[in-house]
Length: 315
Image (spheres, rainbow, N blue to C red):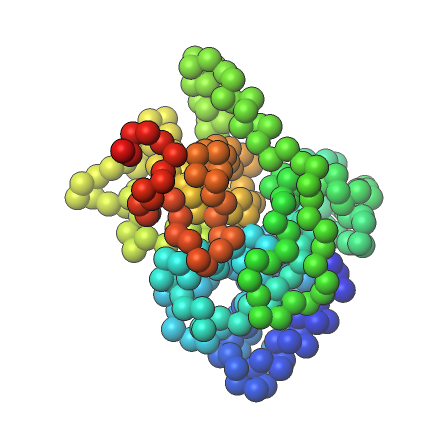
């Protein structure tokens, strides 16, 4: 994937030079290792700021909602699926965006890599197959496939579903992965065991709302956690308030989540918040044969009525 950047820059320069877009949304080198930052490029001269590697896990579709400019955007498979959702939900118009499609081989899990390090990581060197990390008194070379984000390791939609220009040939999609092994494990637990599981899962949550802020689906004008009339959830660290936030946010994403992993990547406590949305993703697939963001021709099952709905209760 490292070779993509030259093509990304070439396309971006041309789009800006020919005034086909007002800006290109991509990535620039972050000030912290393994955390590249979103970058709004508005001039040809600034195109050289753009970078691309396995640290571009932020979902750039998060920066599209309600914009009025003509925008070029660098989009992985999951990003492109969120762009589809944005278009369906009238947050952006299709003719407003020029999608620079990036076939993706996965983003690395910075939480996992940091946990392996013997001290603070000061430098990361990436090749096509390895990640070399260096710090004070230590140096390690890791197999990139072994340190991918969990959502990337099980991703079956690595190629953009819609795009205007593709920076490289499509990559082969994975067909031998079990996307819902962790969900089935939780489903098999007893009610008491499930309660204990989620109590432990959320015990370190500090209510920073990093997961919400990073999510490309969380664009309500006022989030339910900030509503005061009526107040749906308290602002305390009470365990009930914490559970209410996570469960309600997950249900807001039902039938819309693309499992991009932005929520877990943003969490400073390393909480596996995807477990909530993965359960609802599994339910939508099994009940409605639906995966979010794969087509502009259909609306999500939870915001439309279908006379042939498979559930008997609808009749």
